[in-house]
View 1: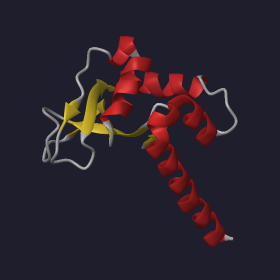
View 2 (view 1 turned 45 degrees about the vertical axis):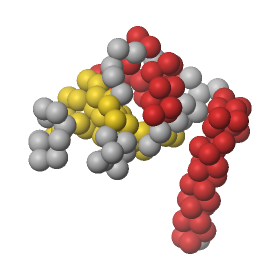
View 3 (view 1 turned 135 degrees about the vertical axis):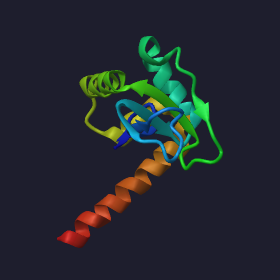
View 4 (view 1 turned 90 degrees about the horizontal axis):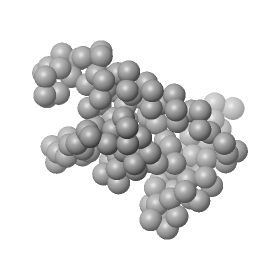
Length: 126
């Protein structure tokens, strides 16, 4: 699943068994939290130090998402649940801009692009 948060953009999927390499079977009890930017995973680790602080961010130039965290599924579910519970804003893109400040300008711009693509999908169905 894709998860857009004020901390960053993440693709969360079941990890593969073993080292997570291609050809390994899916491990339904382990999640891989992937990001395009390392800063997004570092922000998530900062937000959840007790759950993610000791887990190393893995980097690979050979994968479509360069940065990854491997966590037990229960940890991933806890993080997603806590993120949902902390919602206290009525405009996501504005919240991200306020939270990220100038360092997150590219992310905020990308969110506007995603918003536009999905708005066009809605218009196409009307």
